[in-house]
Image (cartoon, rainbow, N blue to C red; front, side, top):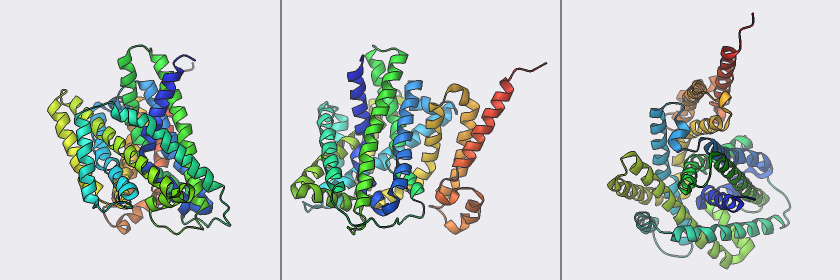
Length: 427
C-alpha cells in the first residue's frame, strides 16, 4: 500500500510519545486499587488516555496546522494563551516526573545518590542534548521502545497466567470516574494536541504529499498507535487487578518493579529499569526541545529565546524532579483539573465535522467548560467545605466532572440554533 511504511513509522513515533516512560507506572497501580472493578477503570482510563488523544491526532489530520490552529476558532488570543499554558504545564510536570521515575526505578534500588543529585545530573544532560540536537535520541528511541514493549508484554502474559485465588473488591467509590481522572495523569491528551502539530509540520517539510494523503496517513497512524496503547495499558491494568489480593504495596513504581521481578527476575527487572531510564530521558529532551521551539517561534526565531527557555525548563526539572512520583502526581492535579476539560472539548470539537463545530459553538462550549470546571480546580486551593454547596448544584461535580453535562447541553443548544437559522423559510 502506498505510504504504508511511513504510516507505520509515524504510528510508532506516536505510540512512543504517548506511551512515555513515566506513564507505564500508572495502569498497574490503578488496576491494583480497582480490584474487581478493573473493567470499569479500564474503560474510563482508555477514554481519557487513548481515545481522546487519538481523536486529537485525527483533529490535526483535518487542520494540518499547529497547536495555535487547534484553539484558533475560539479566538487568536485564546489560542496563544492556551498554547503557553500547555507548554508551561509540560515543562513543569511531565518533564520533571521523568527524572523522578528514573530515580525510583533505576537509581535508588541500585545506587546511593540523592534524588536532588540525580535530577541535577539528569537535567544537565538533558540541556546538553537540547542545545546540541542529534539523531542519537531518535536512534535510541527506534530500538528502545520495542524493547520496553516486548518486556512489558512478557510481564503481562506471564503475570496473567499465574494462578491467583481471588481478586479483592474495588477501593474506589466510582471505578469508571477514577479511571478517567487517572488518565489525565498520562498527559496524553495534551501530548496529542502538541505532537499532532509537530507531525503535520514534519510531513509538510517533505513536500511530497497533498492534503488528503497527509490526512489519511496521520489518521491511520493515530489509529494504529491507539490500538498499541490499548493493549499495553489494558494489560497492565488487568495485571494490577490480578495481583490485588496477593501483594501489599502503596507505591506506583514499587508495584511495577515487583511485577517485573516476579516475571523476569532481578536481572530482567534491572534491564527494564535501564530501558525506562533511557526512555524517560528521551521524553524529557523532547518536551524541553518542543517548548523551546515554541517560544523561539513566538519571539521571531530568536536563538537566545531557545537557549533561555531550555535552561528554564531544565532548572524547573531539577527543582521539581527531586520529589517522588506520588508528590508530583498530586501537585499536577489542580493544573490538570483546569486545563484538561478545555483540552478535551477542543479535541472533540476539532474532530467533528465542520457543520457541527462552528466558531460560535467552539466559543460557547469552551466558555461553559471553563466556568463549570472552576469548582474542581478551586477545591485544591480553598477548603472543599466552602465550595460544597456550589458543587451540590452541579450534576457530576462530586466526581470532578461537573463540566460535562453543561458542555453537552450548550453544544446541543447551539447546534439546534444554527440548524434553525439555516433552515429555508417555508411559504
